[in-house]
Image 1 (cartoon, rainbow over the protein chains, first blue to last red):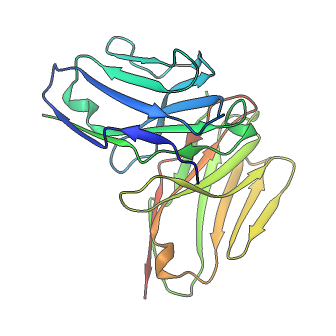
Image 2: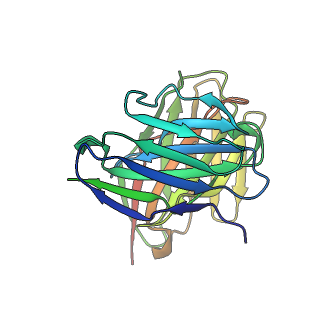
Length: 116
Length: 111
């Protein structure tokens, strides 16, 4: 069964360092999402891509976060510089439709970030 | 923008009892309402969803109801089993829009 792949699974870094997360969606899925999940809370959408275009990045802290999906397939989420409050699970998800209401979101296993 | 409120935050039931989790949403344009189950250390997985053109949907022991007028929807789990223990998230989305999640309900089913 096809799955969303994410790496690394775990990342420990010191504040002010740069970190990057990678996501490979299910083949053929046009929509890709990056969510941040703080322990004990629901996932919070950071950015949504439709193919290579950003559909929504209204909750992305653009002073330190960036995301790209250059060829409309895999995606990278970068944080520079990392802050203590960035410690969280970063979840990538993909769907076949255009927007969440047109297709089930499939989540990856996530990348857990700890900032010291 | 859309806001989704979920309660209770924790729920403990005895095996065999029913569990109900409730959510409210703010955007009247929302038309898709999925529920995700997240076991400890694992990814969220879709368990059931409902669209705004229906009021209720059932899948074995799980059912979801939607009240568009009141802008709330609920997850019902009957005959709960220990393996139902997990965190459950409701979510809401409008067509082409983003999926907004509630804060989650930690369900504990005691044998």
